[in-house]
Length: 84
Image 1 (cartoon, rainbow, N blue to C red):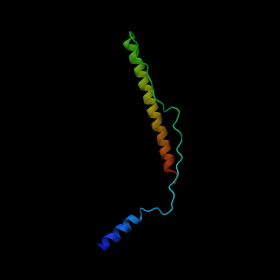
Image 2: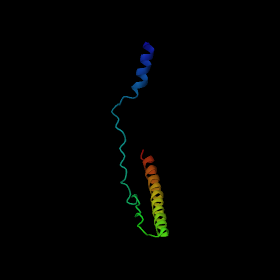
Image 3: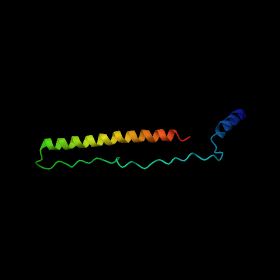
Image 4: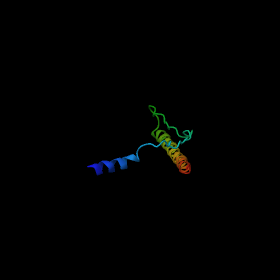
């Protein structure tokens, strides 16, 4: 019993803070291109082809935003990893 109590205190002793402060990270602000894409709702009597084209253009803008954000985030991760 005494040995297990000593072992537990030894293992958990590493969890206690020794006055070492965590590293501070200053992440950049969210880039301007990272915004939602809105597509107007169809109007009564509007051509289905026009609605489909608008929806397709909206998806293309959204996918471009996602790809750009992934590139930006990859750069942030790389910079974060180099801050040692």
